[in-house]
Image (cartoon, rainbow, N blue to C red; front, side, top):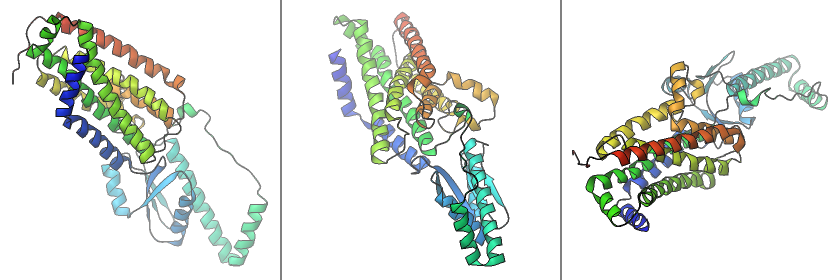
Length: 369
């Protein structure tokens, strides 16, 4: 088994391109798409330069949960057509328009803030018109010292509230997607060894089947897990991404996800004869799993019941949902135990079936390339 590790490590040193490219692409794509909002809701805002709309914009800037990006109305409308995840507001003198693909709790809260800002700004204008700036200053002091009500709002059921963090959505989505490729490509070395006859020669050298599989699979697992650790540490400690005190929980979930992807890759190579066939299948299913698993966009904005029903076949869905629940929703590991246990259960089944099919195959592996 040590020899397998040494051989795989030497091969990685000679050909590190795949691992480097997948890691770099994860970092770049997650950074560019997710932006640097650090846990704040990213909102594009367009104003018409009227006094009232500018006052509303200043009120939004005072809110702590939003990362505002000022733009023009034309650019905002065009971006809304191209990106269904975008949230934008057009502020005018007597009206406002919110662009959002979902009627989520965060969007409704944003609507309340905008309406309140319009109401307060309009009230201020009326007071100033009636009594001048001094009248408003006196009234403002009076309102602050003698508040009629103290309000505190919270959701009745936090589990039913849709929360969205663009930075984490992009980070988790692209990380899970590209690690899928990294692990799958490394598992394919088993198929390549069987095809070239190296596998049989190793068995003749008194190496057990368990040692052969464990050597290859453990190396593939570590490569994938290290890649995820590197990405997570860069975003958490270098870029300062807010993970809501769930960083170590995400790492634990990542460990189970790599196991599931590794098991799925073993199952795929047990169904094909060549590495090229395996690569084609992996490429197709990786994109499909990312789409239906919520890696590219939150599933809360998907309207098709058919697509939502298919999410259960995607390994990415279980990890994506678990990671979001322990970060954005600030849940515990016990709250995602169902998803984690499903990842472990499916991984065990796929490993058993995949290895059994590989062992039962009697024909020799010949490349068709």
